[in-house]
Length: 159
Figure (cartoon, helix red, strand yellow):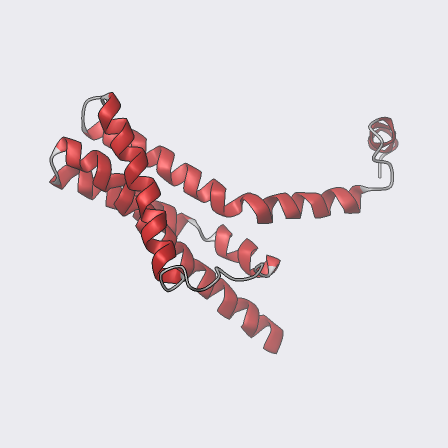
């Protein structure tokens, strides 16, 4: 390690902890990757609808938020058998990391769902249905990405 770099680590109280810092970066990625992908997708969905239509009125923004939130309710109700089962334990870090890294599929297709809804439905309905379709698509496609990641990791463990 270059002396100047080591001195800077000592100055901020992290001397001898590059391994710790790398672990904390991995933890940050693990804990935030799903939310990051969703944030990118829902922000782009808002931008997509705004680009397709005039800027939203206050009621349309409320409909947008309602559509996004209700999609989670529907998918979670399905995944938990009407809230009778737990969502499960912590997922393996390797599965989450790999699944999140292929998140371009879920983000891209969810944004496509928003664009389709915005093009085909009346404006006010689109402000509700767009984020609902996008969020639902994101959640379901993210599950596909995690399934692929799990299979890859299982194959690696067998090799």
